[in-house]
Image (cartoon, rainbow, N blue to C red):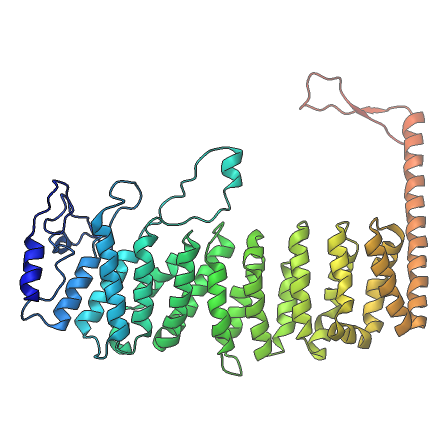
Length: 486
């Protein structure tokens, strides 16, 4: 009786003349494409979305493949036409039924079912991103430039990503069979989707990529290499990439699972892929995730802290005060994990840079550098090496105490000087004497330079000109003459 009811339902004509009813196909079937962009001719002749119930004699595999075939039909969400089309809603319902199917399935999926699933994922996900369309121009449009973009096709994509996550994590999917179809090419195109402007899609891709890395162990080296290449292109060529933070978040958990001692490949990933990510101007968008990845490396192998500090000094900003403050914050986190031998190897160039920060005219940079002395671990390292550090830092502290315009910076500077005074009064007084001697030498040099220029100016004013020098590049003005000294 149920089959007879379905037969009547599928053959029933709609009362109105509008297209897209249950019994009749729409006037024009939506076009679908495969992974390489070719049209699937079989999709054009796909059955109506209502005809998904199993006919007599159909197996579980046949019904599953029929539903996947229906979900390969794509819809155009870029315009308002067909927004309320029942076909769109029916495709979403079929996708949700497939999600439930994978969630409750007990029998393993056949190879044909796995292949059809991967094909459906490729058709729905691998696409050219729609351009950003923002109303208005001029100042209003520039103000909205940083607003998130939401893909209008997310109505279907959301369920496709949920199905993909169920597919990757489901125990009924044989990993060996799935790897035949979710190969390196599929994973590479999946990684390309992380450049999507839609934050919801990037969040789903982050979860899916993490599950793929955990389940498909044979693809792990390729994923690491592909992600490294994304970082290389971003640092050297690309102006922007939307998915750097998500990739770093995934690799934060990946790095925490690395075995000790670290392989040379992993150390190269730190030096050649992660540390250069400090170079772009947009580092603030992903710095927390980047810092977490770097600290995970140092947790695994503390000797890498020196490598990280030298990398930070290499890419240290010169004119960007906000970026400089972020570097100081990351530097403090790295120094908290640094042991004495590694600290002693890099403390001279490190505190030369800190001294420059202390004299910054941007009071927040100077204040943030002075706050490094509030860290107990770092204060202990400095205390045990103050004979080397104080002579480097003292001139900057003295200039701050005399010349800095901000009262807060002056107060903290005096506190730091008092700390050094309590550590080693004799050394502090010696540094003060050396600083005064250097100032006297510099003042004497400036005075000699001033006197020499005064002498040259007097000679130029009182001695006659003896030779003319003409300039062919300036024909109209009178020829210029150079004075000679006798």
